[in-house]
Length: 207
Image (cartoon, rainbow, N blue to C red):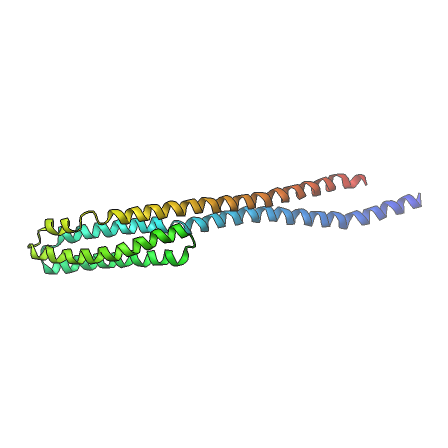
Protein backbone atom coordinates (compact mmCIF):
# COMPACT_ATOMS: atom_id res chain seq x y z
CA UNK A 1 0.00 0.00 0.00
CA UNK A 2 2.77 2.39 0.99
CA UNK A 3 4.77 1.52 -2.17
CA UNK A 4 1.72 2.15 -4.39
CA UNK A 5 1.14 5.49 -2.73
CA UNK A 6 4.81 6.42 -3.22
CA UNK A 7 4.65 5.44 -6.90
CA UNK A 8 1.51 7.46 -7.43
CA UNK A 9 3.11 10.50 -5.81
CA UNK A 10 6.22 10.07 -7.96
CA UNK A 11 4.14 9.91 -11.14
CA UNK A 12 2.23 13.03 -10.03
CA UNK A 13 5.40 14.98 -9.29
CA UNK A 14 6.86 13.88 -12.63
CA UNK A 15 3.77 14.67 -14.71
CA UNK A 16 3.32 18.25 -13.47
CA UNK A 17 6.54 19.68 -14.99
CA UNK A 18 6.00 17.63 -18.16
CA UNK A 19 2.53 19.13 -18.56
CA UNK A 20 3.97 22.57 -17.91
CA UNK A 21 6.61 22.02 -20.61
CA UNK A 22 4.01 20.71 -23.06
CA UNK A 23 1.71 23.64 -22.34
CA UNK A 24 4.56 26.08 -22.93
CA UNK A 25 5.50 24.28 -26.14
CA UNK A 26 1.88 24.39 -27.31
CA UNK A 27 1.69 28.11 -26.63
CA UNK A 28 4.99 28.69 -28.43
CA UNK A 29 3.97 26.86 -31.59
CA UNK A 30 0.55 28.52 -31.52
CA UNK A 31 2.39 31.85 -31.39
CA UNK A 32 4.49 30.79 -34.40
CA UNK A 33 1.32 30.13 -36.39
CA UNK A 34 -0.07 33.52 -35.46
CA UNK A 35 3.25 35.20 -36.21
CA UNK A 36 3.54 33.49 -39.60
CA UNK A 37 0.06 34.71 -40.54
CA UNK A 38 0.70 38.25 -39.29
CA UNK A 39 4.12 38.34 -40.96
CA UNK A 40 2.59 37.19 -44.24
CA UNK A 41 -0.02 39.95 -44.14
CA UNK A 42 2.63 42.55 -43.33
CA UNK A 43 4.92 41.39 -46.14
CA UNK A 44 2.07 41.32 -48.65
CA UNK A 45 1.14 44.87 -47.67
CA UNK A 46 4.76 46.00 -48.06
CA UNK A 47 5.02 44.36 -51.47
CA UNK A 48 1.72 45.93 -52.52
CA UNK A 49 2.92 49.39 -51.47
CA UNK A 50 6.28 48.96 -53.18
CA UNK A 51 4.84 47.66 -56.42
CA UNK A 52 2.13 50.29 -56.70
CA UNK A 53 4.75 52.97 -57.40
CA UNK A 54 4.39 52.83 -61.18
CA UNK A 55 0.62 53.04 -60.92
CA UNK A 56 1.10 56.23 -58.91
CA UNK A 57 3.37 57.62 -61.64
CA UNK A 58 0.72 56.81 -64.23
CA UNK A 59 -1.77 58.87 -62.26
CA UNK A 60 0.67 61.75 -61.79
CA UNK A 61 1.68 61.75 -65.46
CA UNK A 62 -1.96 61.96 -66.52
CA UNK A 63 -2.23 64.93 -64.17
CA UNK A 64 0.76 66.45 -65.96
CA UNK A 65 -0.98 66.01 -69.31
CA UNK A 66 -4.01 67.76 -67.88
CA UNK A 67 -1.84 70.63 -66.65
CA UNK A 68 -0.49 71.07 -70.17
CA UNK A 69 -4.06 71.30 -71.44
CA UNK A 70 -4.64 73.97 -68.82
CA UNK A 71 -1.65 75.87 -70.18
CA UNK A 72 -3.25 75.82 -73.64
CA UNK A 73 -6.81 76.55 -72.63
CA UNK A 74 -6.42 78.93 -69.68
CA UNK A 75 -3.55 81.11 -70.84
CA UNK A 76 -4.97 84.34 -72.21
CA UNK A 77 -1.92 86.54 -71.65
CA UNK A 78 1.69 86.49 -70.51
CA UNK A 79 0.80 86.59 -66.83
CA UNK A 80 -1.64 83.67 -66.96
CA UNK A 81 0.75 81.76 -69.24
CA UNK A 82 3.58 82.09 -66.72
CA UNK A 83 1.26 81.05 -63.91
CA UNK A 84 -0.10 78.00 -65.74
CA UNK A 85 3.34 76.99 -66.97
CA UNK A 86 4.66 77.12 -63.42
CA UNK A 87 1.98 74.65 -62.31
CA UNK A 88 2.80 72.39 -65.25
CA UNK A 89 6.52 72.62 -64.50
CA UNK A 90 5.98 71.61 -60.86
CA UNK A 91 3.93 68.59 -61.93
CA UNK A 92 6.56 67.64 -64.50
CA UNK A 93 9.28 67.72 -61.84
CA UNK A 94 7.11 65.66 -59.49
CA UNK A 95 6.79 62.94 -62.13
CA UNK A 96 10.49 63.05 -63.01
CA UNK A 97 11.49 62.68 -59.35
CA UNK A 98 9.13 59.74 -58.85
CA UNK A 99 10.51 57.99 -61.93
CA UNK A 100 14.10 58.35 -60.74
CA UNK A 101 13.07 56.94 -57.38
CA UNK A 102 11.64 53.85 -59.06
CA UNK A 103 14.76 53.35 -61.16
CA UNK A 104 16.98 53.55 -58.08
CA UNK A 105 14.83 51.16 -56.04
CA UNK A 106 13.89 48.59 -58.67
CA UNK A 107 16.01 45.55 -59.47
CA UNK A 108 13.72 44.37 -62.27
CA UNK A 109 15.46 44.79 -65.62
CA UNK A 110 12.30 45.17 -67.72
CA UNK A 111 10.94 47.78 -65.34
CA UNK A 112 14.16 49.79 -65.36
CA UNK A 113 14.36 49.61 -69.16
CA UNK A 114 10.87 51.01 -69.62
CA UNK A 115 11.32 53.66 -66.95
CA UNK A 116 14.59 54.83 -68.49
CA UNK A 117 12.86 55.14 -71.86
CA UNK A 118 10.12 57.12 -70.15
CA UNK A 119 12.63 59.41 -68.39
CA UNK A 120 14.44 60.19 -71.66
CA UNK A 121 11.22 60.88 -73.58
CA UNK A 122 9.86 62.87 -70.65
CA UNK A 123 12.83 65.23 -70.79
CA UNK A 124 12.54 65.61 -74.58
CA UNK A 125 8.82 66.33 -74.32
CA UNK A 126 9.44 69.00 -71.71
CA UNK A 127 11.54 70.93 -74.20
CA UNK A 128 8.85 70.51 -76.87
CA UNK A 129 6.16 71.78 -74.50
CA UNK A 130 8.37 74.74 -73.63
CA UNK A 131 8.80 75.59 -77.30
CA UNK A 132 5.04 75.31 -77.78
CA UNK A 133 4.43 78.05 -75.24
CA UNK A 134 6.32 80.40 -77.56
CA UNK A 135 3.96 79.41 -80.38
CA UNK A 136 1.03 80.00 -78.06
CA UNK A 137 2.17 83.53 -77.26
CA UNK A 138 3.08 84.26 -80.88
CA UNK A 139 -0.37 83.22 -82.11
CA UNK A 140 -2.06 85.62 -79.70
CA UNK A 141 -2.86 82.74 -77.36
CA UNK A 142 -4.73 80.76 -79.97
CA UNK A 143 -4.08 77.20 -78.74
CA UNK A 144 -4.38 75.44 -82.11
CA UNK A 145 -0.80 75.87 -83.35
CA UNK A 146 0.76 75.09 -79.97
CA UNK A 147 -1.45 72.03 -79.54
CA UNK A 148 -0.62 70.71 -83.03
CA UNK A 149 3.12 71.05 -82.34
CA UNK A 150 2.99 68.56 -79.46
CA UNK A 151 -0.01 66.47 -80.45
CA UNK A 152 0.43 62.77 -79.59
CA UNK A 153 3.83 63.07 -77.91
CA UNK A 154 2.43 61.79 -74.63
CA UNK A 155 1.21 58.46 -76.09
CA UNK A 156 4.58 56.64 -76.16
CA UNK A 157 5.22 57.64 -72.54
CA UNK A 158 1.90 56.14 -71.45
CA UNK A 159 2.89 52.95 -73.28
CA UNK A 160 6.25 52.85 -71.44
CA UNK A 161 4.47 53.18 -68.11
CA UNK A 162 1.95 50.48 -69.05
CA UNK A 163 4.76 48.07 -70.00
CA UNK A 164 6.67 48.83 -66.81
CA UNK A 165 3.55 48.36 -64.69
CA UNK A 166 2.87 44.98 -66.34
CA UNK A 167 6.40 43.81 -65.56
CA UNK A 168 6.07 45.13 -62.02
CA UNK A 169 2.76 43.34 -61.43
CA UNK A 170 4.19 40.05 -62.71
CA UNK A 171 7.07 40.37 -60.25
CA UNK A 172 4.63 41.29 -57.47
CA UNK A 173 2.57 38.17 -58.21
CA UNK A 174 5.69 36.00 -58.13
CA UNK A 175 6.85 37.46 -54.81
CA UNK A 176 3.38 37.09 -53.26
CA UNK A 177 3.26 33.45 -54.32
CA UNK A 178 6.67 32.79 -52.74
CA UNK A 179 5.71 34.55 -49.52
CA UNK A 180 2.40 32.69 -49.32
CA UNK A 181 4.06 29.31 -49.99
CA UNK A 182 6.68 29.96 -47.32
CA UNK A 183 4.09 31.00 -44.74
CA UNK A 184 1.87 28.03 -45.62
CA UNK A 185 4.79 25.66 -45.12
CA UNK A 186 5.61 27.18 -41.74
CA UNK A 187 1.97 27.00 -40.63
CA UNK A 188 1.62 23.37 -41.74
CA UNK A 189 4.76 22.40 -39.80
CA UNK A 190 3.51 24.24 -36.73
CA UNK A 191 0.10 22.58 -36.97
CA UNK A 192 1.73 19.15 -37.17
CA UNK A 193 3.77 19.82 -34.05
CA UNK A 194 0.70 21.20 -32.26
CA UNK A 195 -1.13 17.97 -33.11
CA UNK A 196 1.67 15.87 -31.66
CA UNK A 197 1.73 17.95 -28.49
CA UNK A 198 -2.05 17.59 -28.17
CA UNK A 199 -1.74 13.81 -28.48
CA UNK A 200 0.93 13.76 -25.78
CA UNK A 201 -1.29 15.78 -23.45
CA UNK A 202 -4.26 13.48 -24.12
CA UNK A 203 -2.37 10.22 -23.61
CA UNK A 204 -0.04 11.26 -20.83
CA UNK A 205 -2.48 10.45 -17.96
CA UNK A 206 -2.45 6.83 -19.14
CA UNK A 207 1.34 6.50 -18.82
